[in-house]
Length: 177
Length: 153
Image (cartoon, rainbow over all chains, first blue to last red; front, top):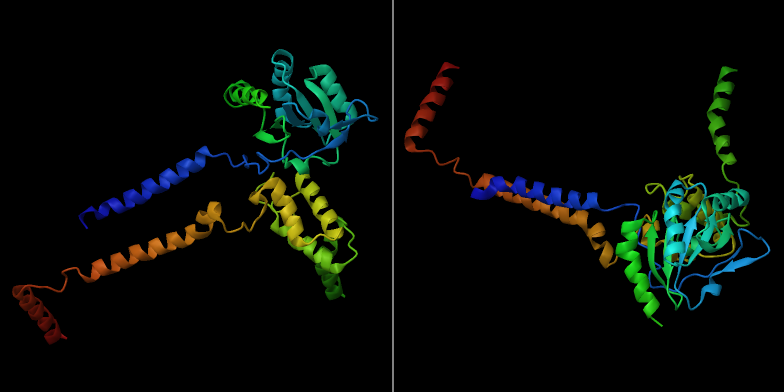
């Protein structure tokens, strides 16, 4: 009973610890349930040519990245330069889904700022988006040769994330059959 | 006359709701289920609002999907499964009871139990305090003092 005065201190420390952990978590970072699941298929009209289709099935047997973006999304502007760099200098295959955009605006955006995408599906009505559990833009998925989702990144891509989380994973996936 | 006007004004807000989203259901039971669902599903953009309250575009999309599914004959469980498969347990305002949500469900009760335990220890400690054990000397003095008081009054 002598140490009774320590009880409030203990409670305080426990609370501080819990709240401290809470501070380091990102409430926006909702863990995806789709990791290590079969990637949902999509089949969308091509952004540049409404007659053509962009389908996830075309990517079978390849390691590729799906990037969801929109002209309305400021973070997408921010990461765009980096995507260009990855596609051009590191040979990363991006398939884009242009979400909830105006076709003309989206085309103008890619024409002016460069196009890092091997193909862009046009999804103004959130047709494919919901299947992928996307709730914001940008979001980037990594899909392996078996067509499984191996990683999801919410928010813009930048060098540190790439070096730490993406590059090692992509190297590993390229090695898989 | 003025009463009639007041009554009319009072009823006015009832009409204002109709303008938001007009989903046509072929069955009132489906409509009820739809309304139930959108209050229980959570918008992922504005995370402390449900689909019914949120005006975020994603919430609109999710409402539309819910409508399509319900209207197409899906059960409420089907719709919930559909959303959970894509967005995880996070979309549920009433999360399922399982290992990862154990703390969420039992935490408040654990804290309550802890509080009660502390209270009990505290009360017991109070009872055992040596308050009643006065020395004879003190007792005499107290009696004398009280006696004096009694005599005076």
